Image 1 (cartoon, rainbow, N blue to C red):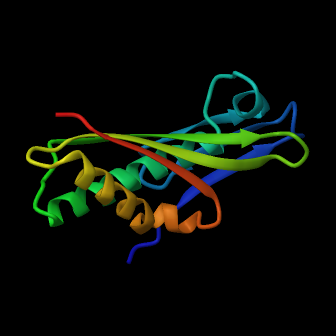
Image 2: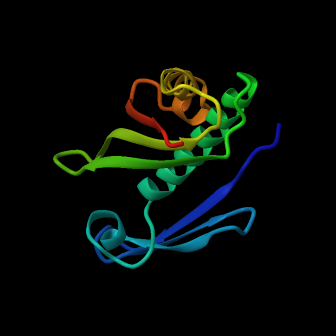
Amino acid sequence: MPVRKADAQWQGDLKSGKGYMSLESGAYEGQFSFKTRFEDGTGTNPEELIGAAHAGCFSMQFSAMLAEAGHTPDSVKTQAKVHFSVDGTPTIERIELITRGQVPGIEASEFEDIAAKAKQACPVSRLYQGAQIDLDAKLEN
């Protein structure tokens, strides 16, 4: 399997320093800073990128499992809310996965059951075992 790479560089101290992140694929490159992480600044932050990775991974895993069950989705859209606390030691407290799907011919209960299994099977979710990952799955037909 391939090894995926991302790079980050930080210059200066925490509050006045600045950083830059990029993906090996070239799909993203941009700045980050104290303000983008702890306030409202221009750029991104590690938690936002973690959320994007988790939402993308879960959406792919869920779509694959729906198709395996005979229900190829028209659409699966997932938002990841990464809860980041700065009380004491900065900590990612939990991740909420909010997914909505348009899947012809499936009952809501089966949709929710497969979503729960996909959360357990998703490689990024497995990486975060021990972390609280909440799931809200709704079928939209």
